[in-house]
Image 1 (tube, rainbow, N blue to C red):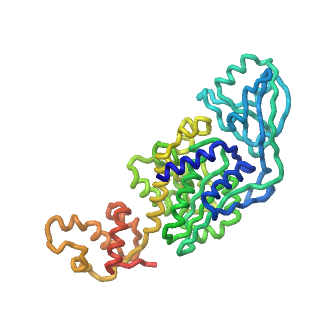
Image 2: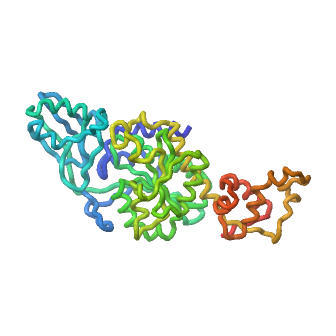
Length: 426
């Protein structure tokens, strides 16, 4: 089962401390490349300008802890969420009262370690559970050794790109983020689902080309768009930002800016093919890289696909989003959703009747030769498809008009093409 394999991949990647840049991102991409040998790993130097943004310094961390009376009470090596992302180095002794200003916890979730970052302003900090912090606060004058062995240096931002060429240069885009540390659903579900889809696509017939990106969130997509926007505007027909797609919760669609792109239409039908109980979020509820792909001046046909949407579950951005929060079945559901989108895109053609008036379907074995009241019911989808196959409607338009699932019409359309009754309009 593919979901079980994806879960094992996530287990390998889970311990790695990732951030916007650095060795954790490279280690993650190196592992994905063992699964996708044609993956290209790109490096963008610190200081590179991309629209209104600049690639930040590279951050790497080796160790970090808070020590009291010779005992490490907070230890990065025990959980990499204990350190604020992009913390600058420090080796100092101070009272707990002074240290407390650099600590982060969640009163509403007392056993969780929060995920906190400070990418674009230099500072340092530690994250811990509210319960542990409350215990330490009982001794405000206690002396604490604070140690962070990190570096902020001119280096590179790394990302991965896989292009699977199809029959045409028209493209479908899939993106996944690789910049969070040990967060299973929020971070790792998307890259492992994208990797499973990539492996499937490598051997599948492809009308379209597929571009699969593994990006640091926000800055990665901005850099990529700066480099490739002209090509994407010309060739991209639909794209999907994958995020939080491996838990067992509801499926979700985060719409593009106006919710009217081909990607939005496909997402709607793909979700309905799985469940009638999915959640729709408007662009006003955005939060991942659909922000960049749909922004003014970019305006690409991209929407978001999730199971439980980011920010909509209490474990989000905490240590509770661990490997127990995702599952093989949850990941399989995410894989199935993306597959459904691709199957529909590959089969969403515009058709036109070959004959004026109705074609005689009976002599082609497509219509019962004995007419009964059940005959029409048996062939309703076929007759309805023929009624609207006028060279202006794609398969999803026809599905809307005749109130059928486009997935049910795919086989019908293929049979009519094979019989020479309709043809694709190119």
